[in-house]
Image 1 (tube, helix red, strand yellow):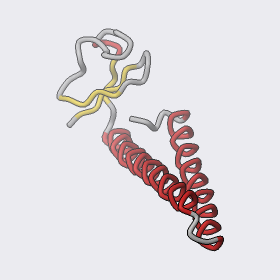
Image 2 (cartoon, one colour):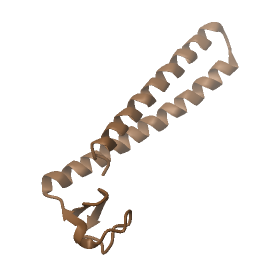
Image 3 (spheres, helix red, strand yellow):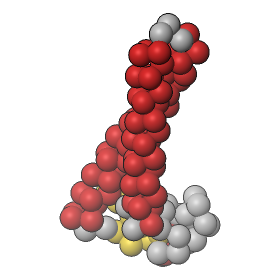
Length: 111
């Protein structure tokens, strides 16, 4: 499938031809540029990687919630310590993926 990029706002359209107007900024069809095969492939790879980061973020948030439950349960000091450390690691993992996504957006690698 072809990919077209709006020269006004960067929106990427997938299809056989550019849309009549950009769904994001309203630019005309003439403002779209067809991406070459290498650029289109990079868009797909970026979409995949960004989806993986979103999944990591979701999993880290789930892990944080589990750790909160473990801390609240407070079976013993050792368990609380492990859950506390694990919660901190989950937070760090989440922030790493969020930061990487922010970098992708800044480089136009959101797709």
